[in-house]
Length: 242
Length: 242
DNA sequence: TCGCTCATCTGGTATAGACCAGTTTGACGA
DNA sequence: TCGTCAAACTGGTCTATACCAGATGAGCGA
Image (cartoon, rainbow over all chains, first blue to last red):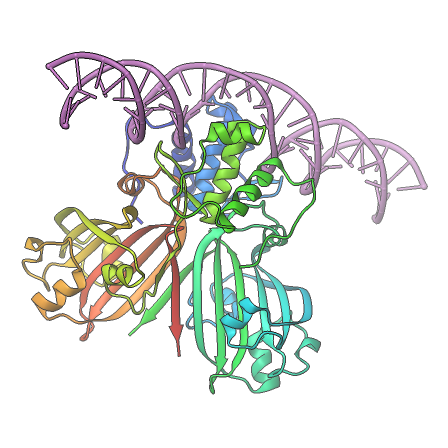
């Protein structure tokens, strides 16, 4: 992306503070996952108050340059994970391939039924049995997304008995002989609200990216519908068409 | 997306205000492009201060439910434009097809050279001649994106003389016989900073989506590299793979 | 050595003001 | 009737302060 044009002294104070900190990040003085000085100390350093300092920090957070860890402080954001939704099937493989450490936790598994919203998304009938799987996934120890996975219980009998802390894609292939083919992906930026915000451990209102993915097998049968809530600074999406 | 779970009275005040306003929007009491009451009036209504009220408004803004117009007030966001980057070539056609009114303004056209950053993105050599075209695009009178388009000046001689307030894709096809084929798309959520923020007419720090698109013709030759800065609440992206 | 407690540090939420800079509107005058 | 201009109103920025709740780490005791 282009650099911000230099602007003279009429720049608001909170943007001057932003520019100072952004400069230190870009120059590498502050490296990924480094903690910034506390808000009170920054306020004193720049001769202003916490409120104004927080404006500057919120700005950097919105740009994806820093993130906060609940009541522990502000940290420099690591590089974004490159995510190719049309190619990547395995979160773990993708994270590992980029030299980072993935982790997946299953939050809960529930047997339920398709509601009207899910029915329109998947082509199921309202009331069809589905398994709802909620997982949290981390990169280098930082939670970056939570996901709700709706599985076609008719097509995948007994799937709720397996271990979900591994690649779902491999499970489907090895246990059910399913090869995922077609995908319909939809995404837009939004803020994370509860319950997803607390599941990731961020405050409500943190910027995020909402991604849904509907997968089918080779015959066009519905297999799984995936709803992902990402931290907005954690990923960069790439799509190639030819 | 899922609804936020109901939480009891320990909810912070600014989230209660958020929920009240969000309810009015969801129920249709407040309709798209309606102005909200002013911050001072909302503060009085909810028995709190402007700072807290602004927290609630910022939260709704982050969710994409409302947007602000500089010193004119807060407004309810219209529906997101559905954008299929792999299929859609024409902004105008896409907006029109969704029953809305597009508008394109050319900000400036500059003859320049590929810098190292552009060279890696496009495959051009550093110093190769390019035309930089900056445009602003609106939906229903609201600016929703600015874009920097880098055109291959060698491949498209004299292109700087045309009218750019129309579809670039049609211009390329009709005047140069170019059919865009391959595309490499990259996008991530970030905040808009100057000069893009002022070009759209929002304050620096407004949430946005940064999209780049590199297009080639049928022979794989580089045609144009497009850098788009969208308001984050203005679009929903859809990608289909089979 | 290990576990617990508690002081201290962090950000999170909130109040109560102030002044500034664009936008809008309505009254006034030509 | 129409344009002008000033008042009123909007959000934008900022100060100064307060208290809360979760995270942390030092130190104490078993």
